[in-house]
Image (tube, rainbow, N blue to C red):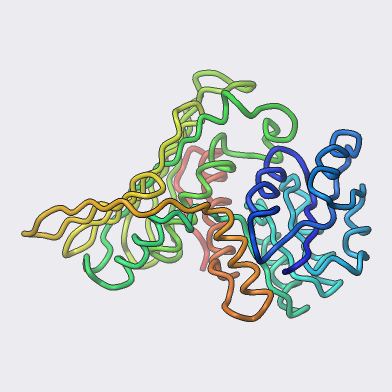
Length: 324
């Protein structure tokens, strides 16, 4: 069992906590860090962990073997560097940073320290997405020509206020919360992105926004893609890969639809898993040296680079080519 500290005990920090505490045989939270301890004392007592108000306390805690961050995005890089400098593995909620240059600083720090770096790209761990990745990598649908992706999660109607409505912390409307997961899926399936053309239309500004982001992308491989996110729409996940020999579509967390040229369309539903727990236990594997974390650092950088380009494209109303 690996003892970890959870830094940030807000909505998502508690989601991370509830995915593993008392449920995982690999990880347990023994230390929580929050700027509002009066709001977390009952939570800490319920789950049996120590509470403090400073990341430095968790880093110095000899019981803590690794640290997980669920903090505002602008804090991630310096916090990752602090943890890495102490020689402890660090898992950071996505996005790792808001620019590629900043993300490179975080990656350089963990590489210099020789510690594992994890990230919060849990949609990779949907049963449907793991099967989609396997199908694509097997070559069963041929060479990738095009990908379509959509993730909406109705957060604008349920999660608002504070840094989440601050464009400096969460730029690009729904891109920072939901759209990043689609970008990660794209990079995981088709590799680095070389060109983006993004548009955003807002029918109502925050709080409780009504907006849409749509993006056309081109990959370094020459494949194309389109993605969208609607902050007020019902929860919906779709990632559809079109190849030279067929197509494969992940629909929701558990369903995969595969069609071959000249053949039948097959639909299969896989057993549901807690994708966040799967991801966190993959971090445990990385800590114990059993397997690399499934999101490689270079992929983290590619995702943040594409994200930064999309934010620039939204601001300029023009396409952006990514430097390689």
